[in-house]
Image (tube, rainbow, N blue to C red; front, side, top):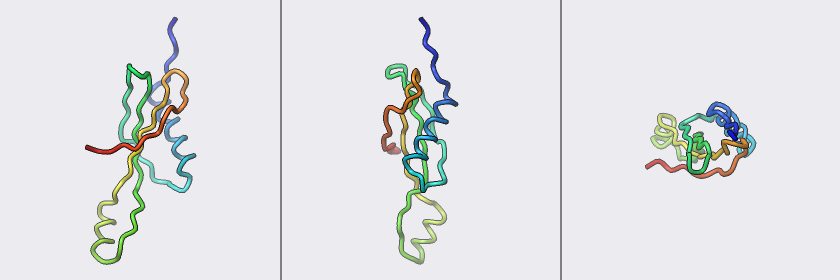
Length: 93
């Protein structure tokens, strides 16, 4: 019996919908990575958005405008059911 698996594109749509529900005030999401795991049968979708760090004025404010730090979240979408199994902090190494 062959089970239907959702596509990467469908998994991304699900992940974006989920993250918009969790962070309704955030508007600037960007897709960073899409990866399928045969072991867990999940799509791992990494999404980033600006990290709202409060800085002082002067040079600190200018640096924040030039390179806004970002937060990264990894959303695990079950490839069989399309449900979100987890949301994790994605750290860059």
